[in-house]
Image (cartoon, rainbow, N blue to C red; front, side, top):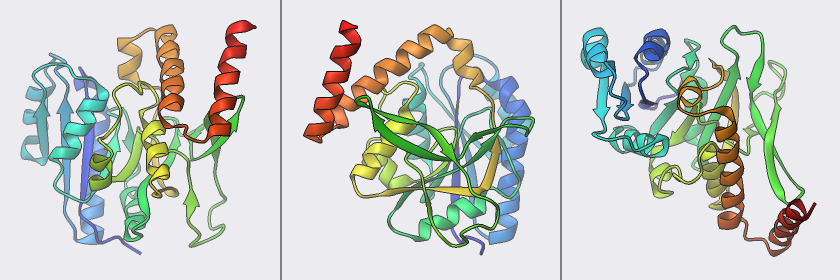
Length: 273
């Protein structure tokens, strides 16, 4: 069944002209395919986070009015760039992409169709490596152990298995997911303190509101490690930021007294041992 929903695509970028040059054509092709199949509108919004390269000039030259460019006058970071994109978006469903994601031509309709269910906050797709040989991300399983939420496990299903059964995911992957625009903004967008785990943190807040995150394995994209973050920070710095963000997320959002006690105990043991 083809979805009948207008769709906005938001792509935050920072000094990403060469990356967009490689991957934006796949996004435009997927939007074209969705419009042709559904008869609905799409728009593509690129938020340039004051990178200072020639991304704006290239976008105007290569894509003209087919891409709406929004420019920050100073660098505000990933979370703010995403929020700007959602605020600028005209349509109810927003597909959020990293600038280095390549889309399968028919990926949009399956994930967007879930938003006919009013309980849905976000839908995450299936991600393979760029060469298509490795399965990177699917539905995310969360386990609370050693005082922390662990959200790194993926699951998938065989094609055709359990047709029509909604598949849940703890997290909507920030590199490739669709969101209910109004709910994303109602939550205030990504927390700028949740560096490296913005998608986990906002998904957790959505679940705590009673909204669900689903996994749609028919929506496929291709993505390797973030090229923008790897250019901006050393791996050791990224690991430190991720650990700090995970701890802050638990302090702000873990309200169950038993789980919070387990969390504090686990942190204390890590310091002492």
